[in-house]
Length: 385
Image: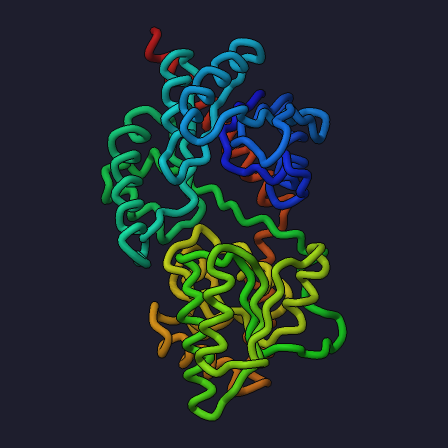
């Protein structure tokens, strides 16, 4: 079986061996050939072969030309390689999905639209997320639903009800989780690890991550006489503003910032050196970083996004918080108030995320796509008959 993937992940062609690179290592065991179309990198755009079977094709153009290039190049590759399924990673302006739908209509090869999360759901951060949510609704209702063999989502409780409200039949929704964790790296320490910070945030420094609320929650705790050391790991457009806000709110040396951690093993050690992980996002598919922290025996405080409500079960493996600084401060304070209870929560957190073991999850994802390819082929055969 062969896959044609339209993806926004350019890490691999930039030489970075992140989660998408690891995913393709497992997929190469399931599929005879995989062709991946990705945006133009910052540098020469050359076809790249990894894992012997996975071919990356970076675009030679910018965003404005992506829809035309994806459609043309996708049809060329499909004519050469005879793929069985088109998989489109859909977000933003949805040019991946628009191109996938065109290729599918022209060739009869089924396509799967993958929606990991919808900006502005469950809560909009600003007018841009409200606009992005409207755009997603239009794409799903009027393009993906009539054309895709399935719409793949990555969590059970958040996305299927939303898509059903938008007119997608339940049988067209495929729940295939995207969280796959290397549990040999992300695991609880076998011995006592010195704690360097009370609160750790890991992730991109962008609008939907609620960085302002994390800083404000830490400031509230300090005002209550409960100062806590925090570490922010990540970079992005809001890094400077977050540093300035932390200084303005009087956190001083209590808030440290690290832009990059070299290896997954180093990141796992950062988690193990922390008492609690924090997520204040307004929308997420996972998020991966909270599950990584939990695998390291660290309880998490999170807004109710992605898989967090089903994993945390408020008070069992951490705490759920609202989308405001005071609620976040209350939840962080609750977890940090009792060290014995914190350790119990952390142990339960590690137990709950064992199901996200990388090989098993990727095996399930690959087998799920194979089933969708077979269903699409059967539907096409029935239509011809």
